[in-house]
Length: 328
Image (cartoon, rainbow, N blue to C red; front, side, top):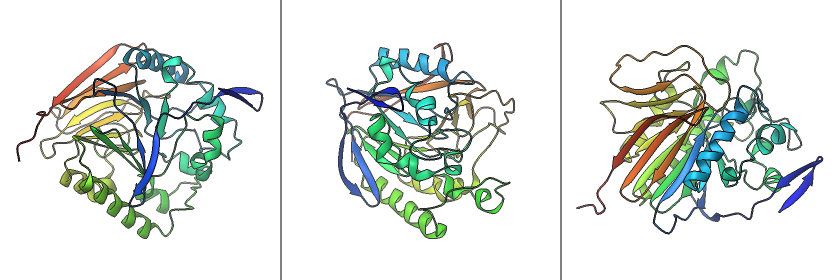
């Protein structure tokens, strides 16, 4: 149904997911695979610019592809509202950068979002507020949480508080650390919860989603704090994919020292940074310094990842498979 808010008609979905009890500190949301056992979702990041920098064009192609694949939900890798997050729950940027942009019928599904560093420069609690969900029930943003889709579990991790420079060298930016301080305790508890959730997962596939890169050839490069603190945990728990934004590009890295695929989908709007560098070209399987998005299709035995550009053209495909039954 539609409701009026600040003169806009806003679509309110009947929620297609179920909230069940939290595991550790994480809330858990349930998505059911289709009748054939498959699941599909879109991934976009670094997008919230009131339609500018081709955000509207990317959104249109997302809708076309989303409708074609009959996606189950959308994943946002953060930096949802530029330049400095939301000022409050009544900030018109929520309408101008989200509600009024992602209007295609193929995008009228649940959105699961993490916070990026730009989001932390505004009122963090506004993005987390259930008030925004009442305005547009597609919206769901939390610091860290789980989406359980039976064959695959997605573990959304709040990565911004890991990055030292936001605390020690903010360069005039003001960050909203309410809910994070004391930082050491927050990060310690978060890492314990991630480890517990991953260890207890019985899903065939495990995907971790965060805003910041772990490995990237783009402008921001690797995030050393995540390489030291988060990467050992996700490697020890047999995670298949790490998906991030932050770098405004599309990218896939596969390294010899880790079985994890490192996927960047941060091309939701402003892009074309022009700086790419990776020491081992063979590990950089795909890099596109432009705007676009990613799709992930999952079955019990296979994952298919596809990157698209602003015109909906396929830029890169990657697949991996697992046996239907594991021999113990």
